[in-house]
Length: 124
Image 1 (cartoon, rainbow, N blue to C red):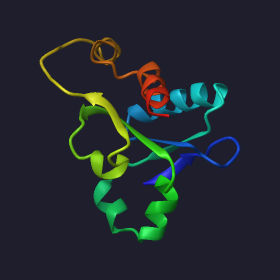
Image 2: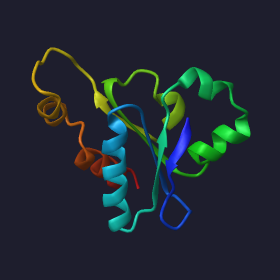
Image 3: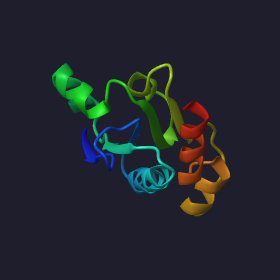
Image 4: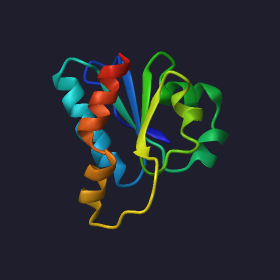
């Protein structure tokens, strides 16, 4: 895991966590949050196993100790709570059974940049 894009002023209030195709969604949400005056950074976290092996100081720096953490996950939300904590949120898939193009499924299940921004604003 690593910081893909820092907050514009360097002092993030929000850390958006994503992997794979959801990284683009997190980057879009970051832009919207920044435009709304909410400093946000994006962390790409493609391998939990390797990230968990890093030193605690590195993990704390990447995740941000005093930021709201929001994970974006198109697959199961299970497991992300270890990174977002009890005050964070996971925007992701909570049930299965639909078949359609990815964009339509993201809309159907509420896995969108708009949903990420709304989750952040609800928690701040």
